[in-house]
Amino acid sequence: MPTPISIVDAFTDSAFSGNPAAVCVLEHDPDRKWMQLVAREMNLSETAFLVPRGDSWALRWFTPNAEVDLCGHATLASAHILLTTNRVDPAAPIRFRTKSGELTAKREGKRIVMDFPVLPSKWADAPPALVDGLGARARAVAKSQFDYLVEVDSEATVRDLQPDLAQLALLPCRGVIVTAPATTPGFDFVSRFFAPQVAVPEDPVTGSAHCALAPYWGERLNKDELLAYQASPRGGIVGMRLRGERVDLTGSAVTVLMGELRD
Image (cartoon, rainbow, N blue to C red; front, side, top):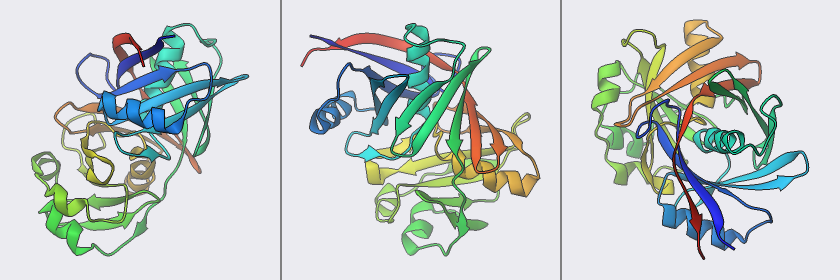
């Protein structure tokens, strides 16, 4: 039987911006090798696979070459598909079982709010591959569970970065977050995210990176609620609300394609 699959632009309210994710809704647990092949075929930064588990959903995320432990935009895309195809009660939270524990998502007006873990960062020395790869002076360097986090001097520096991805791919981490205070009105900070280690040269909008960015800038700015712009070529907006060891990530999503896998 054909398997339904969709492509959703996440962290945006208009098509062809934000971060595209493929979402595959299944009735039974698939083979891991098959999921990896589908993700490679989709060739997007993430493909999400959903399987019902009673009153919750098993959720796994794959890049074109690896399974990952946490992904924000593909979770947002998954919640959007479940809501827009009437597979869940729109008034109730959607519960996901993942490698990072239970995550929830719920509709609030036109947006979706996701409950994610905070990923605190610790100050770190900058490895040579990080310094050489970014080609920009770091104001501060920290490391979270998954990524290096680098603060640079300005939003303009973030936007103008042209990193050496071969150098960044040498780092022992999932990816590199580069960030600075925002000068664009309405935003608290800007960022970009590079993950050549997992076949994602630049991720357009990275929800999980904001699990580290939220506590970093929350402390710096003395704010619990923040609004950020990820300044990739596609661009996207992420809202954050800190709640101790958890953070609410808020965003919109748009379905751009619905089809079937015929394998």
